[in-house]
Length: 236
Image 1 (cartoon, helix red, strand yellow):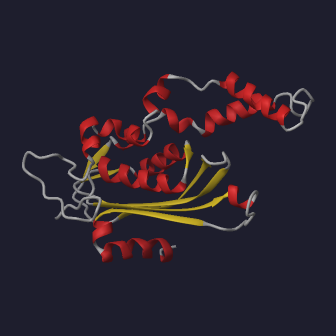
Image 2 (cartoon, helix red, strand yellow):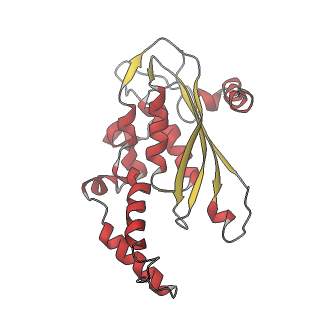
């Protein structure tokens, strides 16, 4: 079957050419293992440096003072440490390479769509450091190998646990699936509610942001893309 690049164009493979012709030159140069660092160049150094919880706690204490609170009163006395532990958990994805999760694959001739939908996630908006949360739908068409279904959920979990914007998260998930699985195509849709819109500023609770990223045959073939969208909307 024809392989497609991330722009939806047929990607002819030379016998001795690159295994992933749709990868950007930089991605091919550093290799798939370092793929996440293309999106997050700081990942390599951060993996070696643990979260500085005392520094976070000190910063939170300063914020409490700055807004006119007493950080030494009973209700707030342990809050800086709690926030430090929370940030360590919420930003744990900075210290992990999501590509590693997709290394274990299985050889299969299956070449129809694989879809895992309604994968719940929560992340932190990097603009206001407020949560956004929702569901991810991930599909791909294998090219000779498949991955355990739970691995797709794990990839979502790792990528979400970083200061994020939903648009970049969508693109990153699609590229990870496409490139690490050497897939014929990949599609990702995220639906999320953003507390930076619901509890501050415009204050519009109930609003939902939907983002999508299509790669390979999902981008080139309208029928494939329509099947993906139909399965998400009507395959309940």
